[in-house]
Length: 232
Image (cartoon, rainbow, N blue to C red; front, side):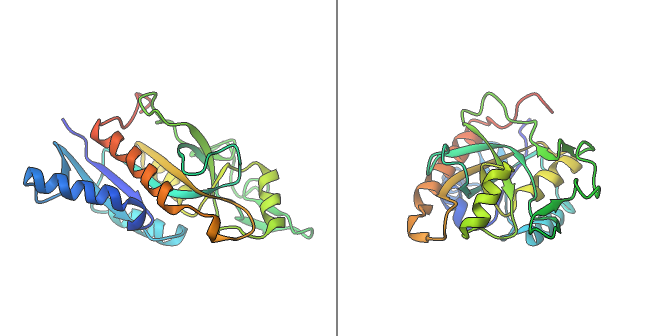
């Protein structure tokens, strides 16, 4: 029996090639709704940032329950070991800049402040981990951090890089991980590197390559129904 899959993206632009692919497939197969062979697919566009993402995901779940869902988006790399344009399966997320600012400007996080236990579900050592990455997914893995804003000020960038919170910066991932774990929905998260996190200079960013590679990987996964391993 086929699964119902939801694809979660902040913006339609990030999954535009997938949308065109599904439209073409639906037209060719005379489906009025998005289906790939027998696989029903929902597309959810959350908007940018944690507030809109929280609302859109919970609103969707109030009416639907996917068998699995995949978050797909682009992100900036703090770690220069990661390759521009390459797609990574995200192993873990953490919400940064949530806590209290100390007198030296350092942000004390929720665990240091004893607001939450770093080892109480859904956290493991203070991180939100994805247990569903299968060996069937032939993508390299990386860690990620969710921020309120994208960083472009060198001292703040260096501070975050030294903190080792995550290799990739995004603005929605921790919400997706948290809700998935709390609601017990099997999930994956894919991020393609659109830029390195440095002093803000968008002329160095490459959205086109990142989006193409992201969608190529996403289409391959859903086309072959290579979605989840046996961990769930």
